[in-house]
Every structure is written in structure tokens, then in C-alpha cells.
Length: 172
Image (tube, rainbow, N blue to C red; front, side, top):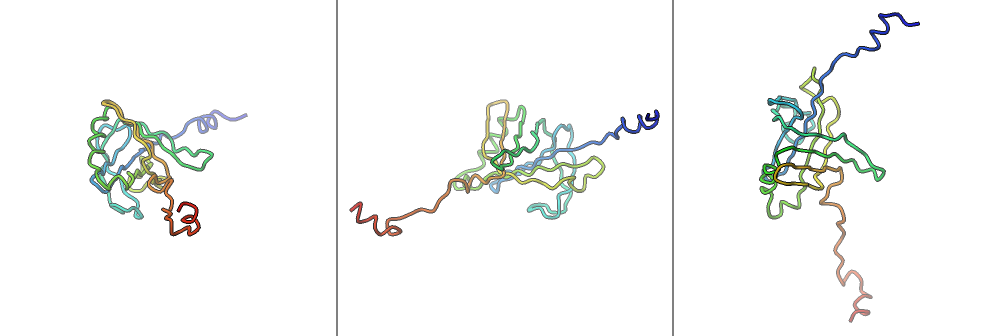
């Protein structure tokens, strides 16, 4: 039979704060760094292997957002949904920055989790995902990020008539 001290030891867990961050990036001017469920900006360290700001301390702006946990389906695609409340108009303005051939480059999202005791390095390996869809209205915004690059899905080689010499005989 466990003692009272043993019960207290196993039932109490030290309170630890975790910060969920999400970076949204596109080369045509979108670079937002958001931290979930905070009311003031926080400064976090970026991993040394990052494409942008490697090894630097960077400020993340607070956002009223919900990040669904990273999920993996039976098709081996990893997805994450980002629910941004009451910023639908702002997200539309950000998306309007993308024009011309910029639509061929997908919006990149990087999900990081930091432990409250160590803000200089992410607790887990950052996950890089690509925006596959966006649901917008005047109030809310929901972005779906997946590990499949949408620019490379359903892309095939363009076949011409000279690639199939016998085809000209059948058509002509």
C-alpha cells in the first residue's frame, strides 16, 4: 500500500507551459509569425537549420488561433488545420499580395512547439507544411496545411505527337 507521500508524488505533476507557434511564409511578401493563445508578443529562437533567420531570436505576434494537432491519415499525408478567429479580412489582404506566377509557389507553414523553460530552441523538430486550401469569410479564416506540395501534385510530363510516332498515322 503506497504511503501518502508516494500518492502525492505520483498525483502531482509540475506545471509546464508550452507555446505553439506557426510561421506563414510566401516569397511575395507574406511572412507572419504567430504564437497561439497569447496576448503580447513573445520572442523565440529559430533552429540553426532554418531557411530564414537561422539561429536568431525572432518575435512572434500574438494570435487568437487554434491549431489542430498534426494528424496523419492512412494515405501517409500529414495535415494541420489553422483556425484564425476574426482575421478573415486581414488574411484576404495577405493573400492578395500573391499575384501572377506567384500562385505557382505554395504558401509554406512551419509549426514549432516551445517549452516555457527554454524559448531559445524548439522542443520538437519543426514541421514544414504547405497550404492546400483556405476557407475565408469576413470574420474567420481556416487554413489547411499538408506535407504534400500542391504545386507538385497531379503534374505530369507534357506529351507531344513526336513522342509517339505511330499516333500520327492513326490520327492523320
